[in-house]
Length: 147
Ligand code: FES
Image (cartoon, rainbow, N blue to C red; front, side, top):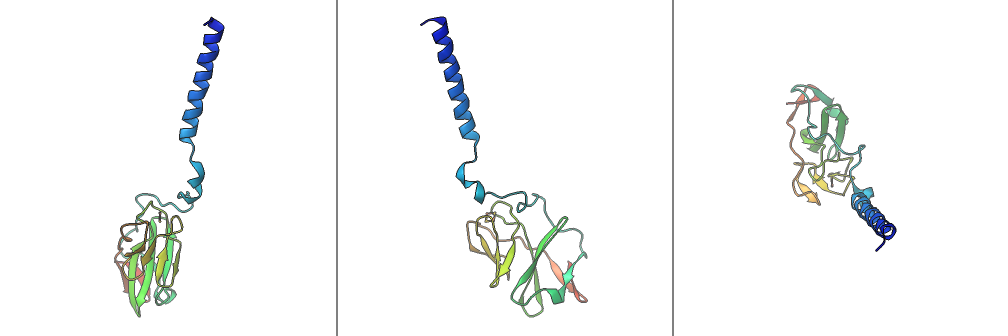
């Protein structure tokens, strides 16, 4: 093999190796299902201080809930029974997206479709294998506050 031929072979091999590396780094077709910066919460997303007013009780629908995403406060406040208020983390335990809607007594994560019960955050439908973390809340006057 001449020097010129050996150089061509080495250069071709280097390009092929670079191509393999680039292909291994690409995200592929499943990018649409990955959490985005719009939906993914910070890992330490948790409510702020005890006593922080979250929402007026009158704004929490019976057999429904309200998703609050303000600063460190990422909480779902639900009302599964009349005047029974439940606080749950709005951060999905599957891959950290924020849940985005409460429909038919179910809290829904937009990223991969996990669903959780409004009464206790239990998993109704995966892929999440654990429920939403409880966040202690209480009724204080006409406000739901962090307990
Ligand atoms: S992050 Fe995957 S279902 Fe919520």
